[in-house]
Image 1 (cartoon, rainbow, N blue to C red):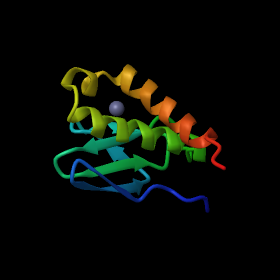
Image 2: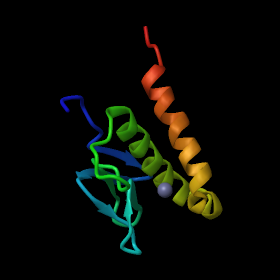
Image 3: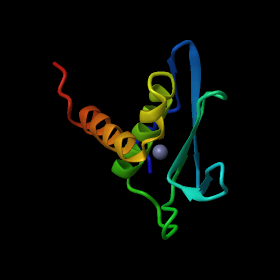
Image 4: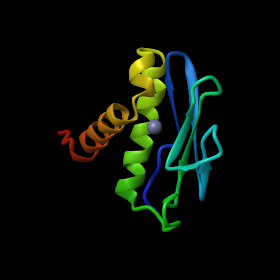
Length: 105
Ligand SMILES: [Zn+2]
């Protein structure tokens, strides 16, 4: 895959780094699509599906990245929202589609 991937960004005075791994584990040792560590300002994104180990498409990776960025934002805004995986995933999908489809002239 030669398309560019998010490597870092800054929010709330944090410099957040994004890492891409073949396999990402959460704090319970379970394989997941991604993981956000707000205090360490690090996001980890899996390049392969935790379900079948197949490489994820670029669009799927963008969704995963946006999902983890949503976790980072909501950690500082709303504890309940931060832990609500369904809402975080929807917000991530919305942000990913916005980034993918916006037209700037
Ligand atoms: Zn999540």
